[in-house]
Length: 160
Image (cartoon, rainbow, N blue to C red):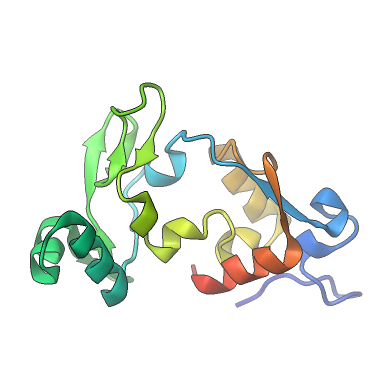
């Protein structure tokens, strides 16, 4: 998978001196908007370990959890979505506990796909893919500075 390194330095565009933060990393601070958990139909992939952790969190057996909260996509097993006024919400997105905010109902056990947002390979691939994601996520380029090495660790945890 291409990470669009600079042909002169071999580094990723976001780790270069002319990138965001002077190459020191990327900023991200979740605003609890829910945009990453809602919108057009999509998927949140879960593996067996994540299913087991979520099932335990919810007091269910793994088969019962899978039957109630997941379905199969071409990419693999995915969490279900529910219709909302914002589009298709992740089944665990909670818009009622904190009025005006969207929070994850299983935050401590959320899948790798969720834990690594917005540092996915598909987003970091190029400045234009990053800019496109930033139009949806108001927390990108704001908040805590995530150093280059930590961005790479997050990027490499989930391959989408």
